[in-house]
Length: 281
Image (tube, rainbow, N blue to C red):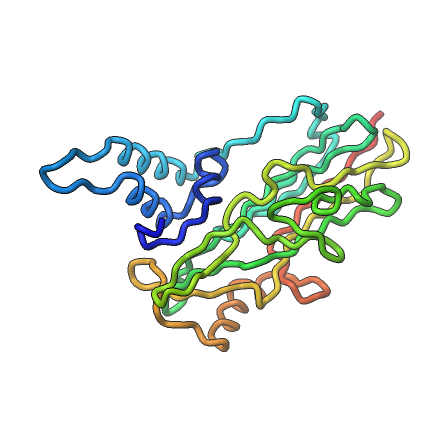
């Protein structure tokens, strides 16, 4: 990646190889330049895989392309989606997409809360100068009804997770990250990729097996200081110019804080998904 003058993290390559999340165009081109460099004239032919990989990346960007799903663990007992009404939010294009899946029963009378969270950076041309809007860190909260057992089952509490760290009231989202090299040599790190990596968030458990379950909510929120606004040049690359604090606040107010509600800590709630369980007859 250093040969291509583009900071691309190992996670960006790994998640692409595992068909979980495609890299941004700048990252993809840097990968191709590194793995399949353009041959010297008259010496060798261009590697045929270069065009094949480029075509594969382009195909992944089509709106009708469905994201691959991780296989269900064999010990999970699938339940009807009708028994678990869910309300997933519209993706915040380019920045975050949170989706809750139908919970699955475990072997101890509980249900595993599962889902998918993909984070990234968004290029925006609605300002006088194009920008890259990204997040360095976020906060994830799982709220459950009174009387439901979920203590100690939250990921990051029950087991260590590479991208989720336990914090009072929830989890800090600290990865995966992409590292971009700025024109002045500085590193610009931001959240980019699949966060959960197929691991269930928590275990939902009521006192009785068929007891209806109140609303469970999962929210992703971000502090103002954890947003980054990076100027881009005409080619969509990082610019040498910097965004002043006043301009940064104005952009964030227009794109984020003026459009979304905030939690009690002042974090912008960028995604919120809910589900409940109906009583079985």
